[in-house]
Image 1 (cartoon, rainbow, N blue to C red):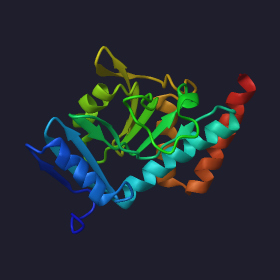
Image 2: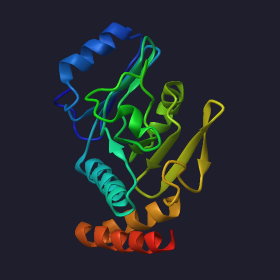
Image 3: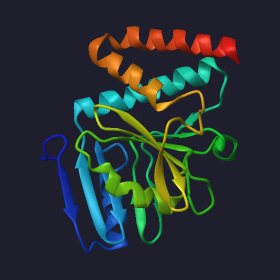
Image 4: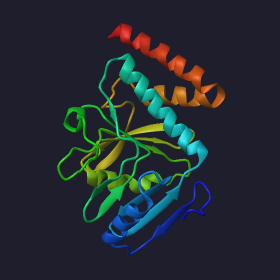
Length: 209
């Protein structure tokens, strides 16, 4: 797998849960891979620089919002989320907002006893993350932000499936339009300048609260 080019995907069928967990142990969470498991179907994806750049930028936006508006947001990055013996994956980023007090101070999350993150982020430059939506649903993740390199879409879990929405429930001041505005800007402008512009936008929102 270490020889795969960036943004490559491998799919294996009829993989046992124990084999999936063994692979996670072998590669570790800092592997530069995204591994998902859905009832015997194992998918391994390598990451590109663009993928990581967008992922980090979204995290920067959320971190700025948290500090500027004094909203407690805990980031657990691309932690492995799994529910034995059938489902598991790694988001590109994930955030605890409403449920942050339940996981404050924890070094690891066990979905058997801990809540799932309030938001999972998928940077989906090759349109493959929709196949993960049933896994997210089985894990009970209430909200997904999916960015395909052109537009960010927000999806809410409703009766077992994800439906599109104009804005976030976890962070209601963030709409898909706002996220798209700054994701578009960062393609054309310096990232530092774009984050400053987002900080100014947050200041206006703070004045209106």
